[in-house]
Length: 102
Image 1 (spheres, rainbow, N blue to C red):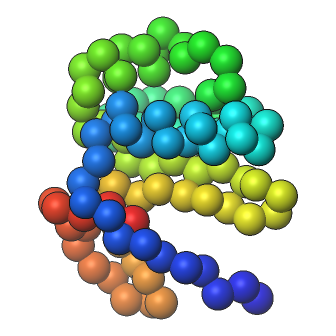
Image 2 (spheres, rainbow, N blue to C red):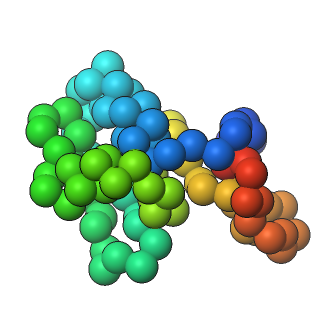
């Protein structure tokens, strides 16, 4: 089993997160990106290589912090973003951070 690597970064806006994952999707030609948004009914898989959907355009325009998770599978490796960090890691529960993301 693989050993996941975590990186902690300062809190990012939705606009910055989407721009980052759009570059990853374009670089690896992997359009299927999964996005989970707080309080939104299952946005699910979206194609970030092309134009943003109307929903994503509104999120970028608002420059909010509503995205909870974003993940993309690149050649068998999952690259994921978790706002506030991962709430359960190595079996330990923790509160999400108001300052950092993982």
